[in-house]
Image (cartoon, rainbow, N blue to C red):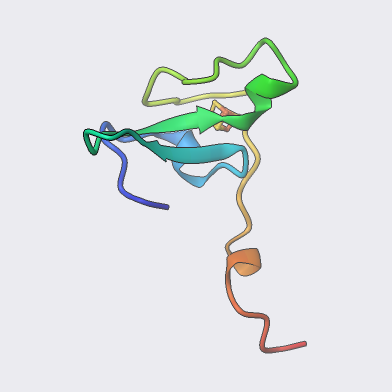
Length: 68
Ligand code: SF4
């Protein structure tokens, strides 16, 4: 994931996080779970230290699958 300031905590390795960059170059996290579940803010307050929606992003999916 792209560098985000401040440290996003759990969001930095969550499958539901998207990094958004605004025209001024600031980066922030958009939580895609917010689209389907109102418990989650669209732009979570960082760092997120505990979250019921956290899903570990699978680094293997982001790599080329050369072993199959
Ligand atoms: S589900 Fe939680 S940890 Fe994952 S992106 Fe949303 S706020 Fe961050």
